[in-house]
Image 1 (cartoon, rainbow, N blue to C red):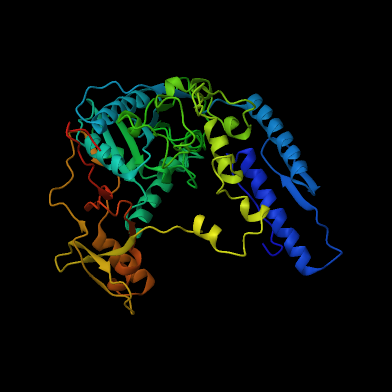
Image 2: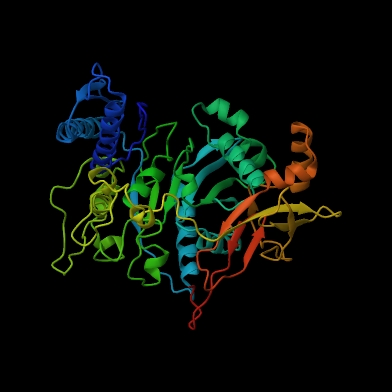
Amino acid sequence: MLGSKVLISTATIIPVEAQALFEAYKHGRDHYLKAKQDQSETSKICCAWFDECNTPNQQLIDSVEAFKQTHAKFVIERDKKLAKTSLKLRQGKLIDINGNEPSYSERMASRIYQSIIELHKHHTVDLADKHISIGLVRIANINPLVQIAKLLLAKDAPSNTRIHYCVYHGQYPLLQRTSIEQLLDKALKRHDYDTWCKDSGIAEIVRSSKEQHHIFVVLATSVAEVGRDHDYDWAVVEPSSQRSIIQLAGRVQRHRKQTPKIANIHVLAKNYKGLKGMGICFTKPGFETSLIRYCSYDLHQLNIEDSLTDITASSRLLEPSAPALTNDRPPKFMKFSELEHIAQHITLYGSKSNLNYAARWWKHNVSWCAEMQRLQPFRQSLLSHDYCLMLTRENKAKWQRKVEGEYPIKYQPTDDIQIPKNAVALASGVSMWHHFNLAQKVISLSEKVGKSQLHTLQTYTHVSLQEYDTDNPSQWYYQAELGIYKQLRKDDCGNDK
């Protein structure tokens, strides 16, 4: 780091990650001091821990063991303080998926719809003489998310109710994703009620509709979990890891801090892969691998209920002393929150069966050959292509693909991304929350930045798409309401693949 200082800001770092970061930094600093040959500088590292519960703890530390002990003491005290001061703002409930619909996505959509109606009933706020709530439904992967979104959009809202949906994930043209995030930033900044009523844009929407109940639903992937200062009334979670549940829970009652009387977070007992009966379910995203497994894909069997009564970072802060394991060979994990601690330890420090781990970089002299770079590429790239939107004379959107190796940059028409002719079907009482007019946005931005519309389109509607299955590529689709996605394929029984 050439003498640089490092600040780590996170609520969910586990002990082994903190230890590995310190150890890597220490080895780098030792090389720095040796190269600098300045005897006046100490080899001890100034470390400090800050949080909202304790006074800052600052120490000069010269060994990994000393860091480990100091960090453990800090997190134990932090956990005690959090337990004492907890307002129980995020209370979870495990939800079964028991539908008999013909496909997995239909079963998930049906259960999520029930949760949306139930959570709205218990977690509303009044605005413009209407009852409203804003909720987040988090699905792990984009293609199942879009399929579930289509099914939800086609379900009628209850009587005297209007449901406003917004689909949010990472595969939108840049200009459109920015527009979605600006909408959500306004609607979910809820520190002050009067300011929120005036500036959120929600009041204008509900006043223009005769329904008494308005449910605003953000259907999102993990982009809604990290780095977004948003405050939702409730959430529905497809599980992938304990870290993900904690991160998402931090977006519920984030600003107002009002303790609910009933659970405001529904956690599905199975995720999409678990419904399909896949052996490894909690992966991509998640920490489960073929070498380190859970004993079940049903959270009822993974002892998660206790950590849902008051969802905090406690299960991440404290390292499990003796993980609960089955008698299988190899043993499998019986508690949902414990696997990720061991999985990260193996990734960072290895095991008998995993000799390709991160600590090799600082524990061994590996720079004499390129083998470690081959085994651990810094940014392992997949086959990807760059695209941008163009407008026809009739102001219809068309996709173009970047020509590889051409300079100046050149795009040409492509069928890689198709735009369906039929509009997204909306049921009775259902609306899209976010509306995007590409032509208007391009004209406005071009005037603002003083560039041509062609330049604006190529720069601000750019998207890079990776092809994960190069042996069996499938068609990309784009709809303004849903972003870029692929259709879920069906197996011989008509279920989603």
